[in-house]
Amino acid sequence: MEKLKIFVVKSVEEESADFHFEAYASTYGNTDRDGDVMAKGCFDNTLKTKAVVPMCLNHDRNRVIGKHELSVDEKGLRTRSTFNLSDPEAKKTYDLMKMGALDSLSIGFFINDYEPVDAKQPYGGWIFKEVEIFEISVVTVPANPQATIDNIKGFDMSVVDKRIAQANMKQDIMSKLATI
Image (tube, helix red, strand yellow):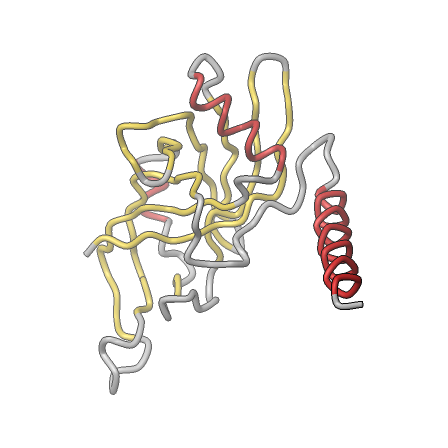
């Protein structure tokens, strides 16, 4: 069984010719939109054999745009990610992330050990006890709506939120004026 999971980008930073971000690729114990849960320690065996995985675009393994260096802590799977900026598609993806147009990521993995969340409903969601990560992607449509960038170094994401709120307010005012 192959599953795709979502993670939250915590920051994006610029360093000379390289562009990096750090994030939790997945967290332990929370239930995702599919009803699945990552058990604490489910990534440990992957990290013993593979601490770096490709960064893909929309889970297309033919569109590798960088790499992710993986680690785990008490909260879950962490990544320090680097874009390959000699690739025009990677540069474009980075620019879209920086402007807030792309703000979500997802992990692709194979399931090695799992059990149902509820034994009485075996198709109602899974607890993943051991997985093998094969890629992490920048995605346009995440399964988890909370898997979004909340900080890009040198750029305050609250500015984007304020501009969206202002645009919505302006649209509301224009709609009300049109009814007068």
